[in-house]
Image 1 (cartoon, rainbow, N blue to C red):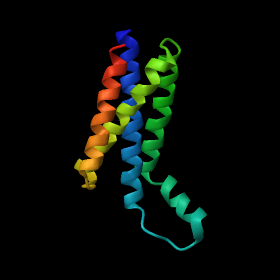
Image 2 (cartoon, helix red, strand yellow):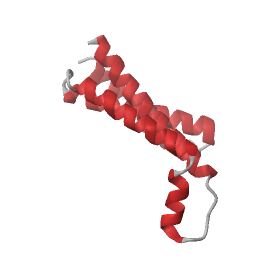
Image 3 (cartoon, one colour):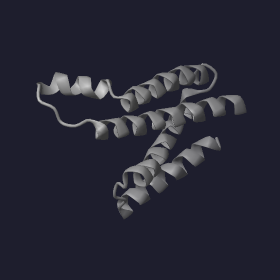
Image 4 (cartoon, rainbow, N blue to C red):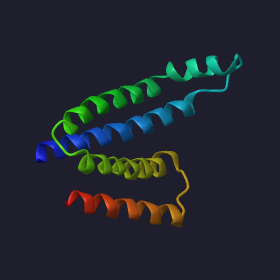
Length: 119
């Protein structure tokens, strides 16, 4: 079971890293003329966005390996751990605001993931 927990954790970590990398990339793209399609092409040609998408793809492959052997009712709630990682990295890297309400919500997620991991 430990092996599959590690796969789940790695998948969640890569998914969260993908979110952060894509956000980082979108912050580097300057507004351009030419419409939405041109702007989208600027996003998907940014190295950080491409790295984020690659992390997502690798996360999906690892996720498939994990759920092939673990109950989905156990594995899927662990995806919420990604919320914690993204929350912390968004605060640290992007200096996004953190309200008390968000912290309480995050604490509820952490408690929920912990309870499910003990089952």
